[in-house]
Amino acid sequence: MATGGVAMELITLPEGTVTTTNLFDRSIDLVISQLWDDVAGVAIQSGLDSCVINEEVLIGTTEDISSTCTQGYAGITVVVYFNETFNKDDCDACNVDELSELGGDSEFCAYRIEIPCETMEVECGEPSAAPSGSYYPSSAPTDSPTVSVSPTNSPTATPTAPPTNSPTDSPTSKPTDPPTVSPTSKPTDPPTVSPTISPTIKERIIDCPDNEAILVAKEGEFMYDDIPIIINMQNGTHVSFQVDNTFGSTVSSVFTQYHSGSFGETECLEEENADADPIDFTAQCMRNTKISIVNIWITECEQSEFSFLNDNVDNAEIPECCHSGLECNTVQYTFKLPCVDACPDDRLEPRSDPVRKLAHEMIREKKAHEGSTSEFEEITGQPEPNDIEDHFCVIEDYPCGVENDKVHVCHYSARDGYKTFCVPEGDSDALRFYPKDYCGPCVGGYATA
Image 1: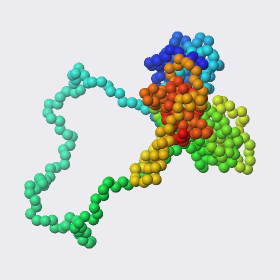
Image 2: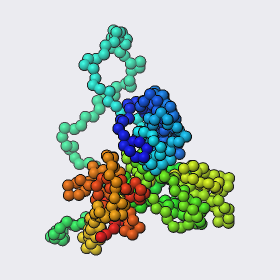
Image 3: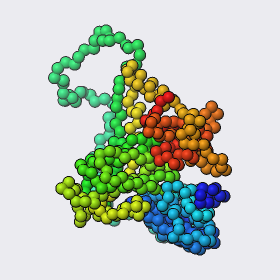
Image 4: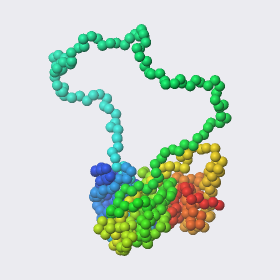
């Protein structure tokens, strides 16, 4: 792709580009080799806060990096620049939400790579047709059978008792089981109740784990009482969540960093003087692990009787991409958000309940409503003609329309909430500018006609 979003010829990731050197419990060491061109610029992002940029990298040059493992996988983004005038000081590959937003006139290829963090069994092929021969035997054969150093225990005086061929002559001297305290109930003469006309259906709740964000790391000493992040929606490719102030007083700022693009791009937003009002976000999920990583920084810039952060120990560092200008007491929390609901709505078995049945029918009717292409273009604007083949959403993933020639998208508006549209692939590119939108039919918060 050229900066500005113009497509260029696709180049497959060269074989041998990524080599694993060490596996640890929570991280993996890798070697990235420059195998694209004689000379190229290379930017490697191996984490939310880790980005290595080099210019004039000769072919065959390697770079050692380390990446954190999450749910068995480590994710890295590699951007290769083919311009001779590439300057690493002007590179924004790690600082934009979408790679198509890069300025300048560079030509580049970007790769999102996910590496398993555990060893895998590999078949060694078929065995040889005949045993492999050795030149000499392991040892010469003995002249007589080998005798153990010491004999086993002496033989028994009499043969062990074999099982009897027929039943014993008399019953056992004692009953095998004691008699019951009282007589057992006699069977009833007629059936107690006639069979039901249809099978009896009972409601049974299937146990499942809590569908919550998981704290995986903390920088600073202060620990919250109530988790400040709540999951609102999951559809496998995106997860919507809200950040709440659960600290009991207004904080100076809340910085939220999350994955906003399919190439690992991140976005960091600041909410100043955050009080009890929640802040809503939608993050991109990792394809293999179906999770998303979110960083939250809580700051206190002025001390008062209600302050909860400590000058000496709550001193987490906020990355430059968050544009934090003041030095304040700060604590950082890193959360792992599952992108698949561990407790789907159908975990209750159906029962004969007209009220519940009516509610399900209403939900299905809301889900069935789709906005038209013209309505979507009226909201997001008419797309300009272009030759781009890789659109934001693709028909293969979420087909819709009479001939399955369009794609489902979910668009959020303050008036209608989340609403499903069936639009051409080209129209789906508008979703890049709406952080709460995602590909596929809406999962929650449906709008009606």
